[in-house]
Length: 236
Image (tube, rainbow, N blue to C red; front, side, top):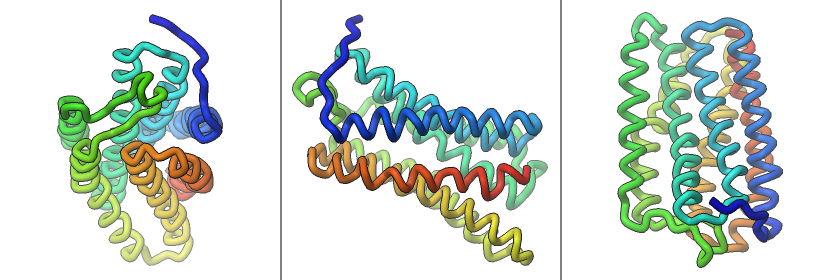
């Protein structure tokens, strides 16, 4: 295995070290704060969201220094896998808030996580779904087939249901303070959905100009992700 500091343009420096590096550390800190309060159902699930994102982006930072195609390919897929897996934790958390953990039991939670995880893993078997090597300047380039199946899996199983139940809860709440807190939560999860779609499209287009624009545009969205914690986690 060869570890080398590779050449990086401004867009990749911003995206990997500034955006993703700081995000990984920040999300680890938030997960710690959530779990420190109490090791109970909603806390564990929401911390699962933050830990999945944190480990995903940290792995991405690590493989930026590796120039072995097979290793980089695996680590890049693992990064994307964890970032997508985090979506199911958001859905489960919202379902628990809506229906309680007596209805959304640990068994149901586990089934949802495993089912979603298996479907995500199927993306690995798409021929030439991901190309990342010297010919791509060690930047990921995805096929449109990979993007399409990724969108279908993540949107239909996680993003759309999470959006539906989150909005349902917002209009269901009667207390103004509770609605205000949940509004922050909505801003946070919509920012994450925005990051998911934007990053996926950026890797598929593989256009240097778009990558730079996206690197800059994603910064405010990352700040907004704190609202997921501010909106509800501090009240758990």
